[in-house]
Image 1: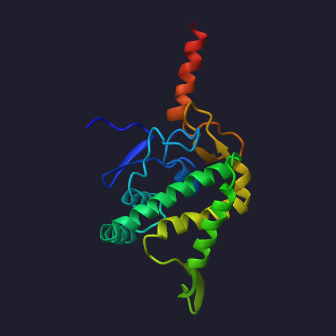
Image 2: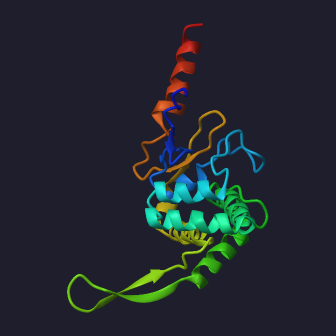
Image 3: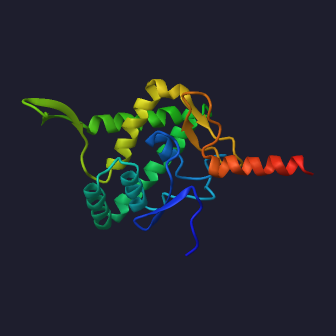
Length: 208
């Protein structure tokens, strides 16, 4: 098998893009290529519900045990799993529109509906603290909706927090991946991909 490009990694038998967004929500949006529109991508890495779950574990949103249990659930309920994957992809497209200020009519409302639904599903629990007593923590049901619920709530934090002003889109050809740029110094999603390609093109143009 030939080596994967530097921006990809093989994770539990699934090829996934390496995180470059400095935020799991942005890395979720970067699980497809060519954000020139809402049509089919040249490369789609969330090719199955299992890939979505494995990706969630890869970026630290799910434990290994949760990944295993959700894959088991998906095998028992394949139709439901496929529906959850489609919902995640639709949320991804709507959220990309919102974060790039190119929202089609209804994109913001669609994102808000998914976030509201996820918020209604979480429960506030008392969990033991390190010392005496308890502390409060949110918990979401560990069912097939969990990956999207987690991403929706994190998206709400991003949209309403200070990081929203630091979201940038890579200007590389056929890219459009998003990343955080709090210092205003970053241009490319990755120097090893879009950055190097731009350097090669610039060098070729100078030597013609």
